[in-house]
Image (cartoon, rainbow, N blue to C red; front, top):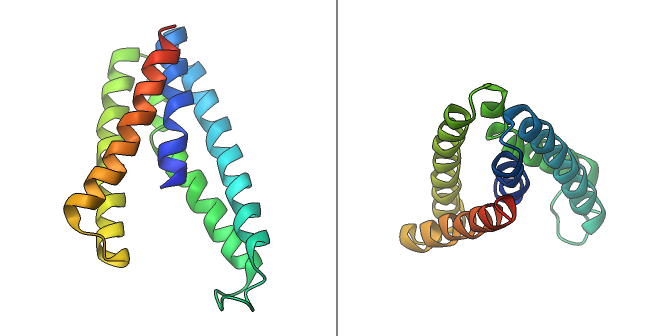
Length: 138
């Protein structure tokens, strides 16, 4: 969830502020890369695997980092489209799909009720998007 949600604000704020899709793409890829590196180290250094039995810290860190990067990069790709409104529309659709998939995963694997999972994931995405609107139109 972190890569998908945390990268929304910089990508969309940049798109709104600059009206330049490729600039938003560059910011989005940078944000996804930074989030991936941060999450990889955070996960790898959080536990050596012995204490919690969660496995090899390097493997956990690599998986977490790669998946965080992918989560942030997926909704960045539409900004390779040169037409801003089309790029934004495509990104909105991808973000909606990502958030629903994340909510479904939380429901399936964490036992969170479907409604609560949707409220938590979509709600957090909406708050981050609101921040993008505020800062992107400042």
